[in-house]
Length: 221
Image (cartoon, rainbow, N blue to C red; front, side, top):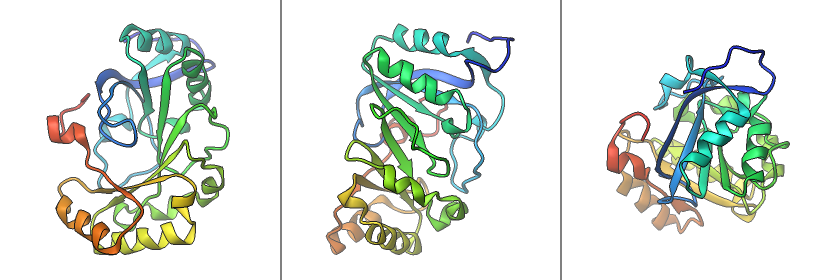
């Protein structure tokens, strides 16, 4: 990685940049460059990227864009941690869009998404009770969602499922964008969640984390 020692303007602290298959959301299966930003204000109980809470190296935004271009694929995902916790994230997203790439953002839903470039596909979590961070959900973000975006709810047990169903109904989420239900890896059998969705005829997409099926918890995959 390319470290930088200047001031914070125009820079981001990056944990890693790597090529993999997109494991989630509408772009699942596509070769994708992941730009993982360091830092997150949340501490979800099931978090699988705790290594991104700290550390990393400072990169100038233009250097990140150049590194992404080096991989020569069409899709790029800015993730974390919580990428929106760094002020420079918005500029990075816009510059990536300006290169003609298909850009997605994975965000916790705890921070304001209103100023994200509209060309970006926002994949926004709504944290369920099992995460321990449901109190951090910023429900005001729902008003900014469009059909170009997606909402993800990670389900760990029956209580989570019923809670998630109530949120989907209360905010009429399926009328706004795609809604994804995903099992907490290692906490609930995927077929159990799939059966619940089918029994209730929910208008949501069941998803598994493709990258974990292929590579388990291997970092950078």
